[in-house]
Image (cartoon, rainbow, N blue to C red; front, side, top):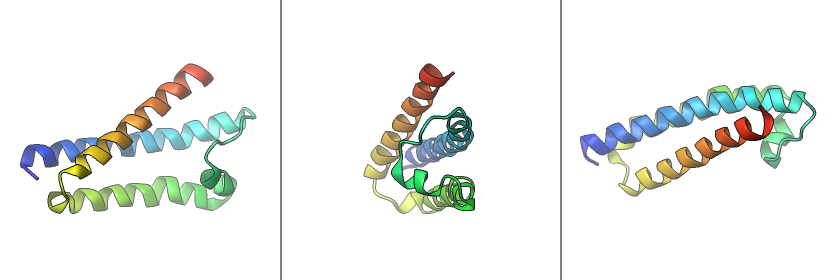
Length: 100
């Protein structure tokens, strides 16, 4: 992976991290309004301490790990990271349009 590709990967990972934090707070807000969480895994841990641990600790640590080993990852990792970034971006737009 070239330096340019690596920096782009780090940018995408940072964006995913920010989207993840926003998703944490937006999920709490929307569920507080009486809506149901659509993700069955998150729904199972939503009202437990594990929700905060997963969303605010585990996910960022995994993103950091990917950034650390990012130079050794194949180029296709950029595709998957970009796709994840795009899905999270669309989710944030969905939150804005539907709930706020």
